[in-house]
Image 1 (spheres, rainbow, N blue to C red):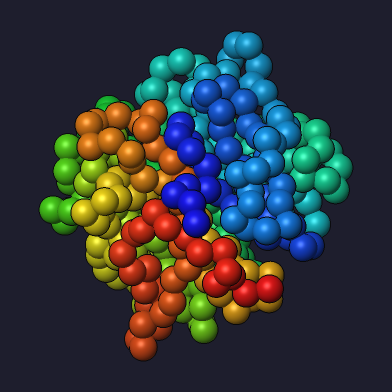
Image 2 (cartoon, rainbow, N blue to C red; image 1 turned 90 degrees about the vertical axis):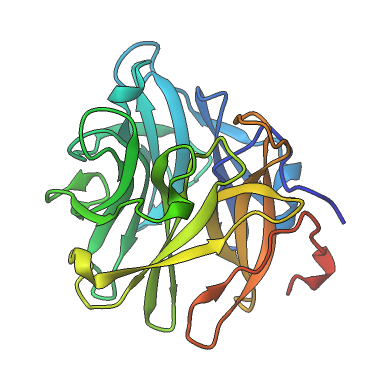
Length: 304
């Protein structure tokens, strides 16, 4: 039994399973991107990690490297991350491509994604027809104060091929603590259903939580085809500020796990966040049932 996968300071967990190994992609000190590797999902924190990329000393992606994600697309590894030049208003999404078949190998920068403005927490996914999309958190205008979720089509892993479309605004009370925020979108699919699980309210508070969008139509790019549900995962008496998740399955594909970060202090701040994980199941209507956050994880319950 243990109380965290990775102790504070750690946040924005992204995990992927590939060819028998789990890979955990993270930003350290907002300056470098590391990848951890483990045979067992709950052992990922025991690997010290490999530095795979550092930003240039100057330029539009030289500072504030946030929430990187590692994706395997058409036989190649890509990392999506947010960065700026030292000014938050200049945050944009960027793409790295691996020069080798090894996710721990060298990466080159493929450039900035055209998101139509401020952007963080981007993720990529494909629909049932194989069409590629990018979804992220962005400002509706040019100033801070509200973050929405947007989506756009992609022609390849490093090119957005259409204008952004709004799919969620923080209109509910549980999305507006301290600041009106929707961010950290993550795609979850099962039995023909597509969900976007996202983080809501201010990440520096205990009220940070998860909401969810369900695709209720066939057109991913139709804003009216996304139906909001929430909150679907929120603070308990002992765990606060739960959010920015990713999903993996056990190697045998019989167990679903959520990785997320949570605060260890009820004061406002970011440096007290740690990475937790727990197994989840499904409601009869096909929605994920994340349950109540808990610090205790029992390794013996993991399927081989």
